[in-house]
Structure formats: structure tokens, C-alpha cells
Image 1 (cartoon, rainbow, N blue to C red):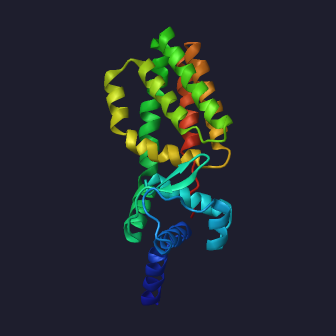
Image 2: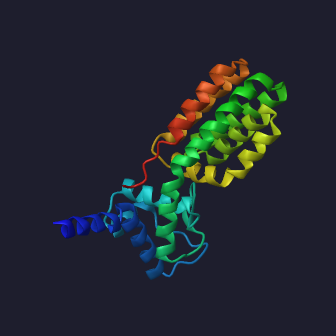
Image 3: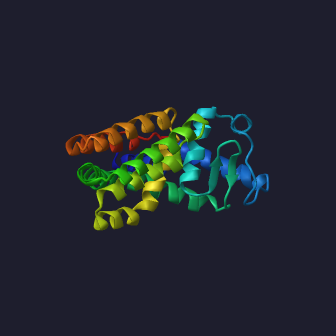
Length: 233
């Protein structure tokens, strides 16, 4: 009885997740097609048909590979291979990424909520212009069908600068790489770019009004939203 329970537990632990299986299939396809850095993967519809999965399922797996830097998904071009790692290293990277997501969200909610609060208290007219410029940049990206990742990054940088806190800015720089992982993953969710832009506008409005409490609350709500990601289970 105890032996059977132990075997069941081992089976549950070692069984690959669906997204891991699909990532492995994509890597096998890259290998068989002899694609190298700079080569473009087939269009999502074609690749989904070849792999026998839905486009929505494939899109999530491609986001996972983009998070790891294996591919670069460019609007209008498609998924471009950046480098060709071995499958075990990719799976290991994905598992490590999943395990640190909650801690990244904790760090962001701690640092960025305070930054938004300080920005509302300390922002200058020049700071406000930088925030609005970032909003415009993201809006243009999203309107063109892109995910708005660059504008998203500019917005959070502008809010950080508006807080005029050198130490908090240094801490944000320290975790920038980890935030990039969550930015790619979050903006890869259907409808998320538009939701994120609307959330940014709410934060900006509070900062413009010098409403520190409102800016902090809006940023906390924003971090909770962008941290809600759905990589394949």
C-alpha cells in the first residue's frame, strides 16, 4: 500500500506538464527543420497544424520560449529563433521561471506601489510629460496590433524617475531582468495589452492629480492584474 502511494507520488512529480511537452515538440521541430539563429518559425496557424494543437495553446508555448529568450516574437514578422538550446535546459529554465513568479510579483508590489505614491507627491511637469509620452508610445504599439512591451517599459521607467528616489530606482534596475520576464508573459495574454494600457492611464491620472493614495492603489491593482498569467498547466 505504502509502496503504491510512493509510486503514485513519483508519477505526479515527474510527469511533464502540457506546456513542457509542447515546448519539447517545438524544439524538436526546430531541430528537424535545421533552423538556426535569425531564422523565422512558420506562421502560428501552420505550426499549430503541424503540431496538432490549437493556435491558442501554441501561442502560450511561444510566449514561454520568448520569456527564456529562445525566440523573439516580432510584430509583422513572427517568431524569430534567437538561439537553439537543448531541450533539458529549456525545460529547466521554464520550471525555474514558474517557481520565481510569485516572488517577482511580491517585489514589484512592494517597490512599484511606493514609487507610484512618491511620484504623485514629487512629480514635476517634466516628469508628467515623460509619463504621458510613454502612454502615447504604448497606445501606438497596441493600436498597430503589437503588444506594447516597449511602451510598457517606458511607462514604468517614467514613474520610477518621477518618484525621485535614487535607492528605489537602483532596486528597480536590479530586478529589471526578472520584470522583463513577467512583462513578456503578461502582455502575451489575450486582451492584456489593452487592459494594461487602461491600467497605466488610471495610475497616470492619479499621479497627475497628485493623489498619492490613489496612485498607490492603482499601481497595486495593476501589479495584481499583470501578475495574473496563464502559462500552460
